[in-house]
Amino acid sequence: MADIKLAPAVQTLLDQVNELFPGTVMVQFGDKHAGYVRDDQVEQHVLKDRLLIWVDDITAPQYSAAHELSHLLMLLQGFPQIEFNLTFGDDELDEQLMAMSTQLFNIVNHVVIFPALAGHGLIDDKVSDEFYNGIFATIDPEPETGAEDDAQNALRLLVLLDALVFYGEGISKHEKELSTNFPKTYAAAKKLYDVMMAKKINTPFEVRRALVRLYKAFDAQLTDWGLPALNSTAFTTVTSVLSERQLRLEMRQMFEIFHSDLKDKESGERAYVALNRSDRQNAFVMTPPKEDADSSSFFKEVYDTPVKDFLEAHNISYIVRD
Image 1: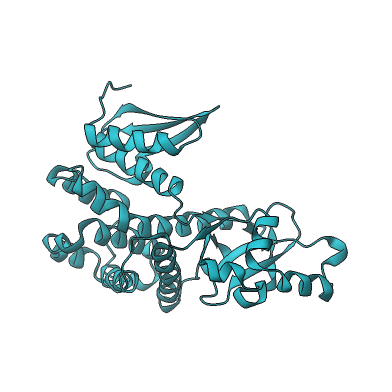
Image 2: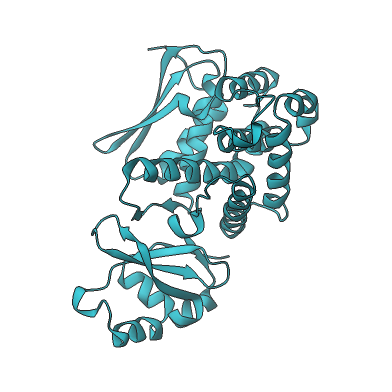
């Protein structure tokens, strides 16, 4: 275990997290040195009322610790989160979908996180170079033939989109090499980046809006390539961000509840999924009492209930929009 003292900016970030966390968050460092940085070099471990941020690789220890703490801080500050309440009944398929949907979620959060880290001096030329090394440590260049059928295209798209967020306008330094190695997927990543960044991303509402846009655009790109879509708008539950006015509306005005072909992960029963009427994103999953599962009177009562009353009665998380 390496003995590394947190930089002042990282210590400040840790202090901010500990002010909000219901327990104690600690940071410790391993001793691996891969020569590149990737998100998977940091782990979280729950130890009773403590949370350990374990930075396994110390290629860029201050950046890696700050990056993980920033994600945790966004959670504690009330930014939208994602949940996976549904299952296809195939663990491997579920895991693949959850992993990719989570990566897209993280990429949107990086729009907030990366500029903040750079502003505190935690992304310098050395870290930028190590991030770039991480791209080629994760994905292979596209093959000269058969690129359309390459199973790695979805992963390439995720990695390159994240790189566009990381570098911003500075991506121009690497554009020639990326375009040469990933002509198909880099061009697609730039299109997705433009879709995601079409409107500013700063507040919880803006983060959620961008995530839903990205889920849809990512699926459209996969479909265009003849790959199966993630269907994250239906499969992934995203925290609702609602105004006080919307919270006073009846459920029928905000959500449409339909009987899904998927099962509720917790109950094992066929799930009912509530889609936000404005963007068709999964807002919550419910399993009605068995005696009411097909009862029109049960759903009429649900639809008649004020949004705030229903969400709080069923312990469904939501965020109040500023």
